[in-house]
Length: 106
Image (cartoon, rainbow, N blue to C red; front, side, top):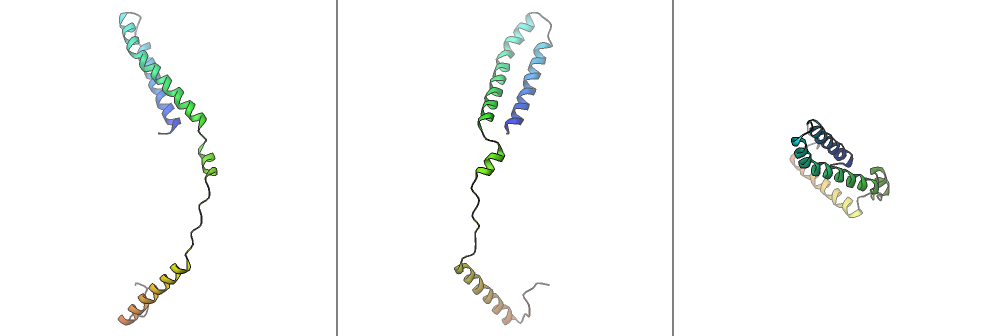
C-alpha cells in the first residue's frame, strides 16, 4: 500500500475512534471507553508518524526512475540472423513441396 493511502486510512481510523470517545457523556462509561481506546489511538498516531518519517527519507518515484540506468538495446546477433534465415528457407522449401505459391494464410 502506498504511504499516502495508508496515512489517509489511518487518519480515518483515528477520526472514528475520537468520535466514539467524544460521543459519550461524562461518567464512568466514558472513562472505561477512553481507557480501552486510548492505546489504539496512540498506536495509530505512532504508525502515522513512522510512515511519514519513512516517506520523507525515501526518494519520490520520479527520482527513482531517473536514477535507474537505461536498459541496453538488444540486437540480433549474426548467428541468430543466420539461424532465422535458415529456418525461413526450410519453411519456404516445405511450402513449395506442398505446392503452395505463398505462405500467407487466407
